Amino acid sequence: MNKTSRVALLILAIVALQLGLLTLPTFGADIENVGLSVKEQLPRESPNSQVDTVGSLCGVYAACTALKMIGFDAEPRDFFAARYVGKCGGSTPEEVARVITAAGGKAQIVSRLSSFDLGQVDCPVIANIRSTPTEKQFNHWVVAIKDKDGVIIFDGTNQESRLLTAEFLGVWSGLGILVSREGENPLLSVWLGRLAVLQIALIGCGLVGSFPSFRINLNRLRSSNQVLLIVAAAALLAGLGNAVMADPENHLRGVVVATSAHAANGFRLGTLAEAEDASKDSSKLLIDARRERDFEAGSLLGAINIPVSASQWSIRDYLENVGRETPIVVFCQSSRCGYDEAVATNLVNLGFQNVTVCDEGWYEYQMKQESQATHGQSASQ
Amino acid sequence: MRFISAISAMIVAGVLLYSGLVHAWQPYFFMYSIAAYKIVSAQLAGVVGIFIPYLQIVLALCIAFRKAEKVALWMAGGLFATYALAQASVLARGLEIDCGCFGFVASQVNGFSIMIPLALLMACVLAVQRHRFDGEPSHKDLFHKGLSATS
Image (tube, rainbow over all chains, first blue to last red):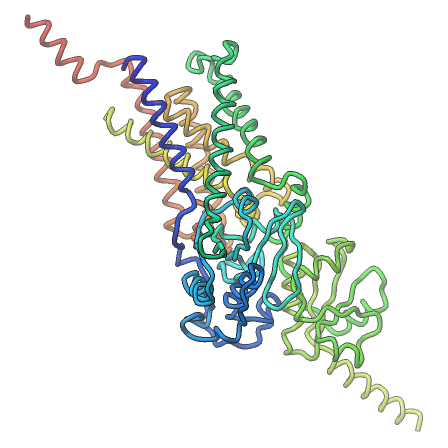
């Protein structure tokens, strides 16, 4: 192969690579990953706080929220139909897009988007995410808007919350529905952004390669030096690549917060006596998982209220200054209420390592108190 | 055999490049997949998750352009062997997690997912054999040599 054909081949390879990268966001969706939960169950009030407010209707809520952001008047109630929510597990991307087009907007389903792409678009993006970091399926739809401090999430009827880009990218499948008005093409800015990065990278490589001192014949080096050079090149690329693709400013915090969810080992079952101990011990945290009005009617002394409806993100903000090693005891109404386990799951997902769920609750505590009072009275008589 | 080795090398390079690009595109996704294996600490998963995709890209380029190819193939083989061992340990511990093999596609660790790195490891071993034939003349060379000898 002569020099000209080698150069021609190299140019062809670069063009192919560029085309490949530019078309990486593919239209259509990886259906097997999207929207459908493994357990097909009837819509109901789930103990899972993330889907508590909207359940299988999260796609419709997200679509209506995005539509309102670009000036359309869309009410979720108008789209509570099988055409838009085909299964109890939730809407597919096509069904969410159907809501948008039915309301007069334009929807583009794009998969394999990156954080960089999210920063390029100037329209609301409906993102397909896991409802919790340890959830296996991407089973939830939210509206995501990237700004310089992270990603703003609009989750159903919950208030907007802010996530670190690192946290968001950990639960996002890369699938997004770009919501815009007819005649607009937000995907164009994604392609232009990618093209700009690729050109800068290629020009950088060309400049580095033009210096004679960088022209190393790798094949003539000793094996150990070849390994060193490969590792060094990868480290250099990783540094440069992550400066663009990741969230360098919040990187460490994001990694620790989000990966610790996987490192945690779940929660254990405890007794009511442990909850009573925790109420007297200031180094422990006692959490009442019942709803606000039940908590206000009465609770264990020293308990704080994190209701089952609280989103994981709001719990994270609320307990921001609590150490991840702090012993936490969670209880709810009675032995079978399930709210305590839902809140404990969220706590474990947030990285709390020492979470205990009570096998009994407020009802049993009151029964115990009453029986003690009765025994005390009969003893005094 | 030379042809099979060359094809194996191209397959390894292609898979490494695709996997590396997909993971580099969405860095935290791979990081969390590594953390879910519960083999390294969460912090170390953060570092490994950033570095490995770019190592895969560099190895793919080395193999494709035949620069330090043998070393790159051995390193790629080491990576695939590590992936297979990690998945085997997940199965042994009864964890139900995503394998994190190709980024966005959520596929659970199972017997089939272990076969992918093992097959790629075999491809690496086959591709390394390519160097044995580098010094030897090809069929085309032998044909031309035969022609010149007869003339």
